[in-house]
Image (cartoon, rainbow, N blue to C red):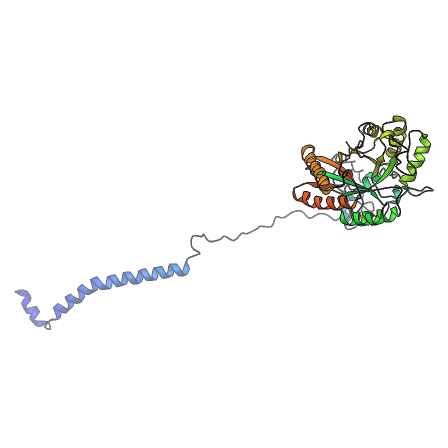
Length: 392
């Protein structure tokens, strides 16, 4: 009853409104405040956060490392310097970088750097048709091949470059060039540059055709007529080397053939089954090739040839043909021989085919070479498959 007086003094209904207001503040106001605070927190996080799922990148700060400055050459002591120690050259035969001082004590930029690759002695293909004067000996009949004073051989210098790969390799030699002008022109134009061309010494304009062949990228060899068993009924041609002739006479005939042109890597026999089986006749012939730095390509027509043993004895690079590819002038027969060459190359690593510059042979070989390359066969010059006593 004590509170009734106080209630009477207060405005009517005020207590009820205050209580209601007090209850609303404790409910809606608190909830609204929490929602606002949460929204502010999320907005601040979105505005200030870094890229999602990444840590802030730290700036890399590099501290310079202080090193002592090199003293200039002028500040070197005036006392006489000790002689430099002689360094043993590397045993590797690959490319070497050699530093050369143009003057004693010179530093850059007067110092020169020479890059030397001792294995690179061949001609650039762009100038392969130009004879190397260091490899020529003058004679009454024309230029004779000879080793250069520095030891380089025509076999090395005039060889066509190849990949050096140890995959299946096929070398093809097409002989009889320069006998027919139109046939020679067609062979040079149609045959791929990897095919080796052989010139007959009785042909015409051999020097001109040699230059055309070399400009087209071909490696070339010179054919030499040697006595067959049924000579003279079967005659290889003028200045044939024979068993009955003296060594001097045969060397004279050989030098005539060799002087017909230049820029070739070796010689290949034309016939010669009887001559190549006679050690007395064949010995001086092979010794002359070794002296002049030429290879010998045996067409493989005679199993009695003494050429392999004599070539090894006289240091002559040697190649033996595996088969004649065009003994039968039929496209199908020639293709079978070429396919047999490919099989031999896959089995042994390399194979050598010998043919003549007949129109059918040239066309068939040109088409086969393009297909063989697609099958992974590398067509190489004849020098690439030679056994070289000076290197092996």
